[in-house]
Image 1: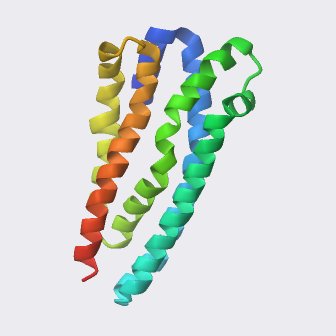
Image 2: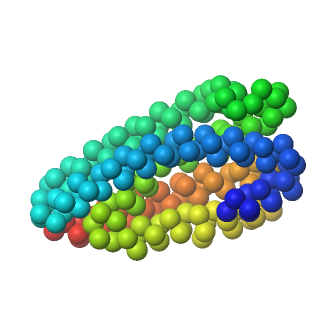
Amino acid sequence: MTISFNQQLLRFGGDLAVSAMTIMTSMWQMILLPIEGVAQGSQPIISYNYGAKAYERVRGTISLAFKVTCLYSLVGVGLMELFPNFFCGLFTSDPELLQLACPMLQIYIFGGCIMGINSTCQQSYTSLGEGKKSFFFAFLRKILLLIPMIFLFPMIFPFQLMAVVLAEPVSDLITTISNFIYFRYFLKQKLK
């Protein structure tokens, strides 16, 4: 995935675009790592209560994890959307790089606004003994959707450099929405 991004960014934006990608992935980690921490932290509670057949506690834990991760992802992404200069400025003072990195960050990070949902669903599958489902949605997001879009979008859209960046939020949004729709069905079946 990183090779695909770097190859396309280098092709359409040069070294400066690759440098901007470094900033974007660092910002992405600031969003994703706390979300994953909460989602993974809920796993033992979900697993224990599922094993004890305390299904209301399972639902309550998943609901709380959704609320916390969604709030964090919305606030974090919202701040990065509103103040990209501040966040990119944490990594560089080069005006040319800032000029490129800020709009790239605003596009790249947008899908993270609902990433709390995706992470909570994926960790919950694992907690409920369905690790293959978790793997499928991770595979869908990064391999089946993202990598092809990185190469396809610049051929479709006239703004080639930003089209490469656009692949990330589109992949995130498609995966999160489909994951959540399936998860609701899955949870009803699993916790009968």
